[in-house]
Length: 508
Ligand code: GAP
Image 1 (cartoon, rainbow, N blue to C red):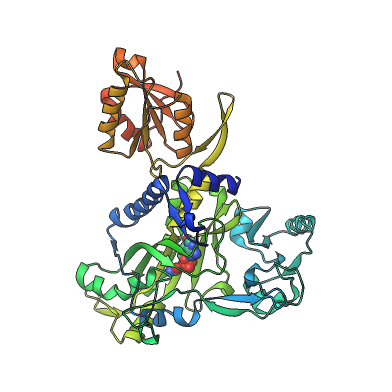
Image 2: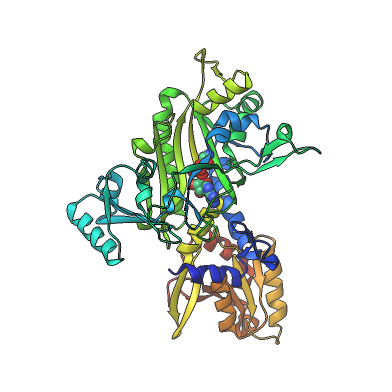
């Protein structure tokens, strides 16, 4: 799938626009248009329903974006939330140090990759390509591929990050001016956006736009325990905006400076943490598959020990094969008691939990499934985008899961006479009470179908000559273009059944 085609479809059909475009836009910021806002909202609603409303062990929260700055001291973001940057002494370019041109072959075997992704696996970040493989022949194949791109592969074991930290970057050419030996040592650059509260902008009034929603949950842990009667194990979920002054926002909405997160902090007894980690790792992976991401484009990558934060005993990333490379969709981290411990230390408040039944007091451990709403939106857009042949013509269609489709059904009068527009309007009004639907009266019926295919609308409902005669309408399935007739009195129920997964009738 060509990313440029998707970006242009998103613009043309009103899914996603560059932010403040009439002023030239702003790098790393995006606006969701009429179709995009429905798509993203449907994804967030589905996440909320499945993770909060349908469970007995989860409650929600909606915290402020700006919090007491001590929150970010406790969390480590003030001291450590930074990207290593390298500057080019020659052309003054500034790059994230993991984006200097490196082509590397990583010999390290990885169980998850070896088992699921033979023969080898590429992940590309900007101009960096990391290749991991299990078998010598895979590595040889990868080396040939890199050589065919005109590059000398570098072989190493361990993580690319470590390679960079160890200073190997100085041997690599500047990505912009291509000179070698001009890149500086990596220097840290804090990613938090700063602002000030009140009238005077000085150090004392400095605040931060939150870089993650998670810390608001930790800061409210005691409030929730004291007010909600939740007993451990239980989770707190939050969906909301986060802000990071990313050095290189890129790949459309994949890495932006303002984005939405869908985060869960699941609190449990330390003895049960490993079990809950395994549970969430599996459950979150399955959620993407259940909503249409193909399992061969998804993988669960366990972090190697040298990638883990010092307090984490295990972390896994759910990664998706985007057109620009395999990249993280969601992280599931076993964070131990680190966060509550830090907030207890910095706030001076007791954040331990008392188990009434067992008469045991302890600091709960946390499992954190942390997803990005924009990244999920992008993955579902990439997965949905297809070009196929219909009636000898190429059509572009977005095959969204019905739960995510911005418009659930479109109603069309075949012609603007013989009572068809009135009948279509009535069906449209009936459906609108239950679903987001669209009435389109203008143009050739084929063109109207194509427009809805591009919007990802699963069902077309046409009022035609036969409707006037026998009260039935034509239903059309977006994915197969198959058509069948439904009694107009039963349209609402028929749409509901189909959206909930009832198979479409077999062809006659
Ligand atoms: N509380 C943990 C945390 O924030 P993270 O891996 O930094 O972990 C979690 O972020 C998720 O948030 C990512 O998997 C991704 O989906 C999303 N995300 C992070 N940075 C992003 C960015 N700059 N643009 C879009 N989504 C982002």
